[in-house]
Image (cartoon, rainbow, N blue to C red; front, side):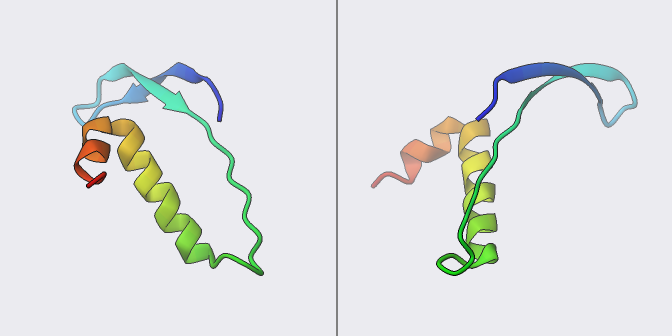
Length: 60
């Protein structure tokens, strides 16, 4: 997991605004895990990092 960096980003209206970006690297052994499973994990992880309140809703 990398540090959060502010980079220029084009908004939908065409204006440039700052965006917070964090890089992550995930390694998976394809003999054990299917690539689709890892992709679903990455998408869910991104969703929970961007909106942590969703994580609280899923902890029941």
